[in-house]
Length: 287
Image 1 (cartoon, rainbow, N blue to C red):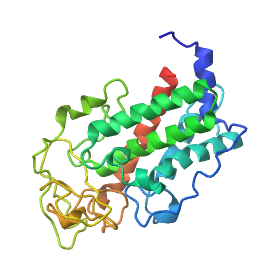
Image 2 (image 1 turned 180 degrees about the vertical axis):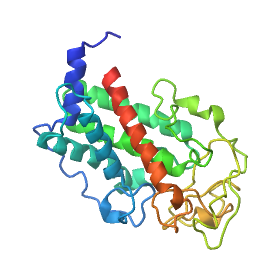
Image 3 (image 1 turned 90 degrees about the horizontal axis):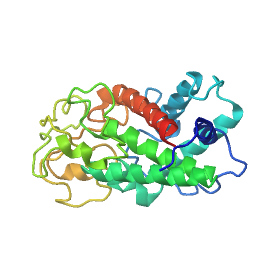
Image 4 (image 1 turned 90 degrees about the vertical axis):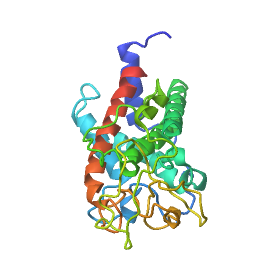
């Protein structure tokens, strides 16, 4: 593969962050679903103490721009604000489109670790192809959806509960999506203890019982025996996986104590922002 000149790499990272002449139309024509299975997509769904996907993404990009990721630029312009809005549309799209809302690989749920990484790698390739074709709207859509999955990993996995305080380098590992499986819980392993009722951040604070990597399971429709016995639930409104043991989940989508691990919400959001920045740096180095 031929290498890109520094000037061409610079132009591409700028292109992602500066608005194209054509807008993304009809992106959010679908009605929001009754429940959201991630950091809340926008402040409309969140409380004042919550960090949303939109906030995490905006803060990450603003801090990178102010830190000099684009040489000679240290402030987000009006055009960049519009580009960030388009990227966030791609992020929100992942929660609002029914086929993506229920897809484990779009949210790092259901222990779909390698599958989630493979999807991010596919989005990365789609973004690269779109940039080469100067289809900036498509590139930003792909980037936003990749950001969504990366951010969700920290809300839906037991990464924080197993005493990790920085981002996981195996998440969004474009060159080796299966590397994340090296420390994954075995398929028949019990990963969470039954907790509650009530299912909240008091009763379920210490329900993770595996030191190995696992994720929450989310079930949008009632039904028995969909989640394997002893695996961790997501919990919260709209999740029926709690119908099967282990009851009680590990999601950190909001800071509310009604969310089983809500006490870790801000820590999860902080690492999610850190990894969002790292992924954009990776793009700058490699596209």
